[in-house]
Every structure is written in structure tokens, then in C-alpha cells.
Length: 163
Image (cartoon, rainbow, N blue to C red):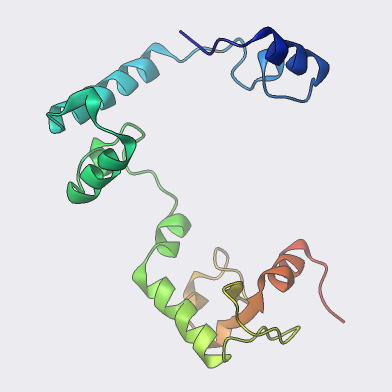
């Protein structure tokens, strides 16, 4: 199986070596392990067992189906499950408590970046002053938060800082 390319497309890829095709493709010369192939096949089988309509289902209807069946192919049933090895920081960031903390920071700062004073337009972030990963005891402390717009937040994380 695979994608069949027209001669014009092959020529384009040959003239543009930065493209992700042929030898430049990240999967070029690689193969899935037998274990991975088995997991992928098992995931497909599970999906089609859960869904009697089988292969005829559209991608939109598949998404609707998965929303209505929250356990289907998620968590332990998912093909990418590796025994619950998520990093504790990753888990903590997904908690409702973290979302509530961020909302409180944005409200407290009146949805205004505390560096450039840009007002909120959907690009505001609640930033931990003392890093989330390094100071777990300060994660939900309201005094450890500040509202930053996306550009200022990037500057803080890149270490550029402010005058």
C-alpha cells in the first residue's frame, strides 16, 4: 500500500529536498515493530467490535461515537496505553484545580498582561512565577501567579526578561 505520486509531484520533491518525502521522510527505511503492529490491529478490532457499523462510519460519526462511549479506546483500552506511566507534573496540569487557579489569576489581574498591560483577547496565560515542576508546594498558591500575554510569556520562558 502507500501513496502513489504523479511524475510532476516526484519531480517537485526531487527539486525540493527539504520536503518530507522519500529519503527525507521521518519514517523512511523504518518499520513498525511486531508488537506495535499487533497493538494497532487490536485497536482497530476493538473499534469495529464496539461499532457495529464498521468501516462505513465517517470520521465525524466516529468522533460522535467516541464522545458517547467515553471508555472506548481511551485509558487502559487505548492503543497507546503503557500502564499509567504519565509524569506527575503532566497529570497535575490536567486537574480542575489547576484550571481554577489559572482563572483566579486572570480575574485577579483583570485580564491584563502585567508586563505590557495588553488587555485580554484570548491570548493571556496564567504564569507560575516559581516554576510549576520545581515548586510543587506553590502550584496552587495565588501569590505564585501572574497574568501574561503570549509574547511576554514567551519572553519570560526564553529568559529574555524585561527592563
